[in-house]
Amino acid sequence: MMPNNADYRRSLELLRETFPGRAYLTFGETAQALNVSGKTVERMVRRVKDPIPAHKVAGCNRVPVTGLAEWAARRGLIGG
View 1 (tube, rainbow, N blue to C red):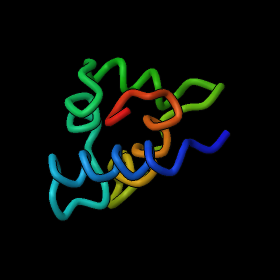
View 2: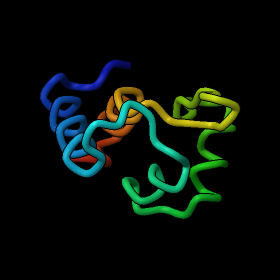
View 3: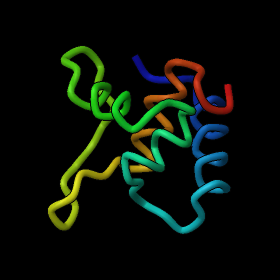
View 4: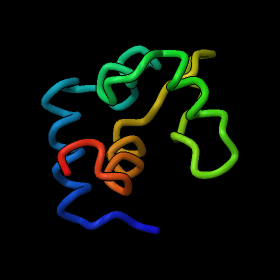
């Protein structure tokens, strides 16, 4: 299910304001954006049904800002 375009844009704008110039976030930064713990982010990335998108970047797990904005907008978590 794709999020509403307006919700996605609001989520992306808020993430870019909070983390200017960043394409990827650490799990700690993702936790800060979602107001949850780093361990919660780790569990959310690993879950089978609709996980937070994450990729290995230079050997470290990172969350793409655009992917997080889409994921959060579907749930009304950021900027909704």
